[in-house]
View 1 (spheres, helix red, strand yellow):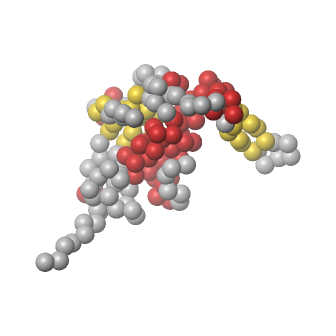
View 2: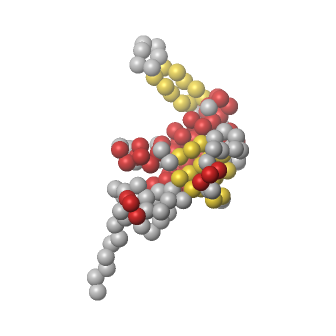
Amino acid sequence: MQRQTTIAKANEIERKWYVIDATDLPLGRLASTVAKYLTGKNKAIYTPNVDCGDYIIIVNADKVALSGDKENKKNYYNVSQYLGGLRTRSSGEMLRSYPEEMIERAVWGMLPKGRLGRQIYKKLFVYAGPDHLQEAQKPEQLTIKF
């Protein structure tokens, strides 16, 4: 008896909405778990060339945990393409001023690059506070334990 591999079709995929509370969760572990759910690797129908993942809403991004001395030693860089246009910000500064961007960058680094990765990334919603704008989708609470 020969087994058949199931290939997911884009129009047959059922997507769910999940809310994750980032309070006191390590940034890297949170990002890897979110990337797994966004790409659909937690499902049995996972297909690498099809976006089969779910929607993820992250709340309390400003309360994410950083281990060790990353708050002072880890830096984020932006370049404006002009001479002297390098801007450097520490993780502590990013956490205080731009917590959403910090989590988005961590998740983006764990997603596939290219057209499919950009499509997957659009299903991520990050909020600094406890409130979000996707109440109409009736998201389920997703608890992550480490």
